[in-house]
Image (cartoon, rainbow, N blue to C red; front, side, top):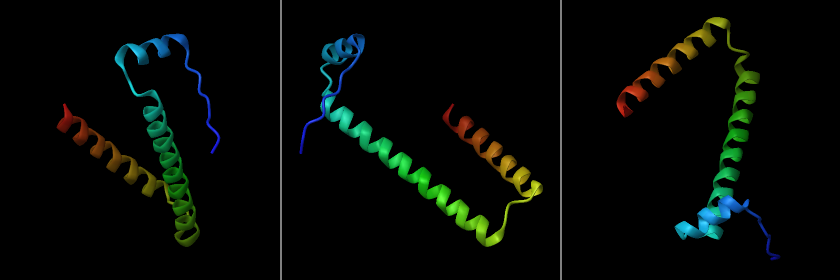
Length: 82
């Protein structure tokens, strides 16, 4: 497989060298994680589209309930972490 060259801005290159970071491994991990993140977003969007097709669009009341649920979950998470 051909190798890919990646160039870092000088300040980032200096920081990587100063800290002794394994740049290649870090880049591979970051790229794999980003690909996985994008795949999960796509799968979620596909699931949501299928669900909407099956049961229809959520009503304004459904959306308000979901926003309230997320707000409460966010507050609880923030309280637990901080």
